[in-house]
Length: 322
Image (cartoon, rainbow, N blue to C red; front, side, top):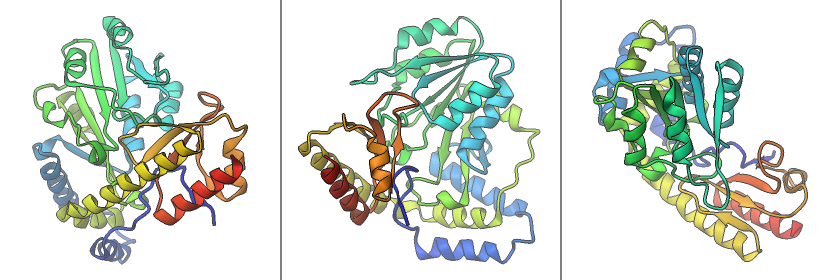
């Protein structure tokens, strides 16, 4: 069995209570999920996010909700994204958007070119920015940038906060003031629930109006698991602490080998090595990583932080290759 360090998953399973809640959902596989359960999940997500309940829209996966937003808005306005970014969203914009413009993130600092961004707001635009960015692991936005975008009447802004739990940086409290803002979140990462496929947006009125006519069905397994997780979200603190400790350890060891490691605020690291076909060499040793050589820059790979045992095997393999 291959070690999957390419999906940014949480290597630790959720608590027993969450697993048992999911098993309860398995007994109802012949049923669609119940409205009262969706309502409870919406309420718990709102309490967790610190926003009114009617600003929450739960969806079967944050990647799908971002794609749905592109469908809703990109036919009548251009889409503006950084590159590299979360690739499924980028590919959806490539396929469906009226026009796609990209803002390149350049090493070593991966700074957002705000001058270019602001100049693009001279006509209607849907801006989608992951904060922190995937795959660089860098926070791109600050309050001044977000307010400048939202104050422009041409702009609709989506901030993908898939890794919010690792950074605690959010703009969710602005959705009541700014109808043209939506925040994308997921319970796949810090909560360790990638398998249940539940994401959500915290949306301003512009987004809530668009989604008002959309019928959304979630799996009963996912709903029950998510409800139990959101009732007792404190367990993610231990997950995050373990990941942060391992991320720093892995980074230190890679640097000792002469490999360039970029600072990250997430559960993955971006590294740059001159080793030819590093991704292929790792696959030969049973390790999957995200090789960015063809999609972006040669020699760059994104490596998710796994369990200590998985990370040790990765480090040993890298050392052998070096």
